[in-house]
Image 1 (tube, helix red, strand yellow):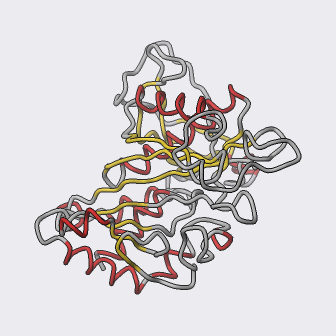
Image 2 (cartoon, one colour):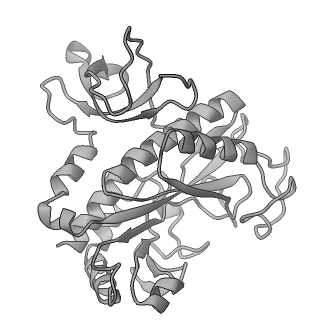
Length: 323
C-alpha cells in the first residue's frame, strides 16, 4: 500500500524564484534502502521547480534526482540514463509524450474508495466518465488534484473517472522527454499529498482488485516530428515494427505486478503477445482512429502499468524507435 514518494521541507531566509538556482541537499540513504548506515548520505540535486499550490505565496516545489556520496548518479536514478539517451539526432525529431496516469483511491480499510462496506458496487459499465454520486466516487480529490497541477504549471491536459469505480485518471502532456516524467512525478506527489489531507490513499497498483475489474495502466502516447507531418503513418508503422522486436525488454521494465493486469482481458493484450491495431484497446500498441484517418499523428503504448517509472518509459520508447 505504501507509495514510493518521499519529501521534506527546507526553510531559507531569502526566497529563490521558480527556475532559480536551488542548492543541493542531502538525506539519510540508509533509511530509504539507498545506502549503508556507515556511509549513508545521498545527495539531492534539484532538476525541476514549480510554484507550491498547497502552501502558496513564494513557496516552491523542487523535484530532485539522487546522487551517491561520490556525486555520481545513484543506481535508483532513472532520470540520468534518459538524459544520456537524448542525442542530437533524437532531439532533432522533437519527441513528444502524453502520459495517461490511472490510479485507484482507497479508504482506510484498503478497499476502493466509495465501495459499500462488506460488499461490491454494481458491475463495471456506468462508471467510466460517469457523473453523479452513484457513478463517480472520489471526484473531490480528483478535481482538487487537477486544480493543484494547473496552479503549479504542470502540463496536465485532463482527468476522467475510469472503468472501475473509485479509479481515476489524469493525463500529462503533450510534453518532451524530460518534461513529461518530471511533471508526472510532481503530479504523483501532489496526488498523495492532497489525498493525505482528505484521508484517501491513492495506489498505482496495476491490479488493485482481483476478479472482473479493470486494472490500472499508464498508456503512453508517443510521437516524433516525422510521425506528425503529412505521410507520417509510415514513420508510425516503422516505429511499431521496431517496438515489436524489443517487446520483452519493455515488458520487464513496464512496472511491477503488470502480469496480473496484462492478461488479454479488460482492455489489455496478453503480456507474452505483441500486436497492434487501429482503435484496438486489446492491442499492445494502438493507432487511434483519428490518426489512421489523418495518416499522421502518434501511437499509444498500452503496455505500461500504472506504477511504471515514467523516465524508463520515455527512455525505452526512444531506445527502441531510434534503434
